[in-house]
Image 1 (cartoon, rainbow, N blue to C red):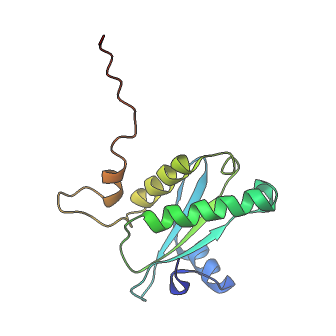
Image 2 (cartoon, rainbow, N blue to C red; image 1 turned 90 degrees about the vertical axis):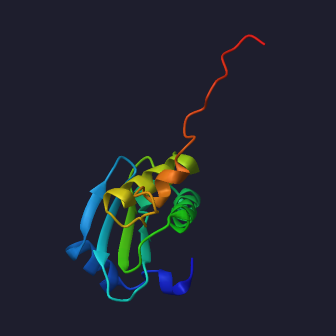
Length: 134
């Protein structure tokens, strides 16, 4: 993730937290606030409650990758806070959760047919069994 795509200052985190709108699921809290910069910036918060340093850093790496893979509208500050259970979740679950929350926050870019960009990537979420006798 590029440097200009990161929220780094405490004041930026505080502004998103106080003025942003929130979406929540079992693993994460996502706060979104419009900015006037023309670029979407991310901040991540993983508290010591989540686990040891290795577990927290793994969650942060997975969050950065899930955020990077989402096709987002420009001009938002987004803070993602990990909740209990995030350390035990695999990457696919984290990515689905983040994309769902970003879609609910209305920051995912729209594709031509009106679907969100991440809904295209969620196809094939369930395995299809042939079930025939061959």
